Image (tube, rainbow, N blue to C red; front, side, top):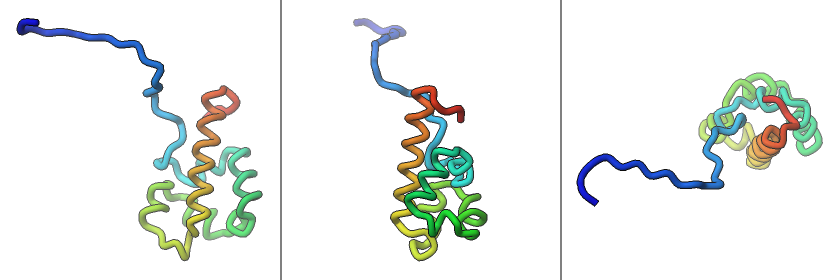
Length: 100
């Protein structure tokens, strides 16, 4: 090939669109979805009823929670639940069962 401008197109089955929920979502935005809220209440009822979690922590993104809050405030199992909720909500959104 000589010099010039070339454009190549390739077919792919990879998905590059942004998912509606991510670590940039706030905890409250996840918990606003009934499925995620029910899951959180089932898996961590002691945290789900906490005013601290619902107010102060709820206004933070999952990334902020992971990076800035000590595990004595938000235990690792809760962070793992938040990540599971993100995956669950994105799967439901992809299947059309959920409107973000």
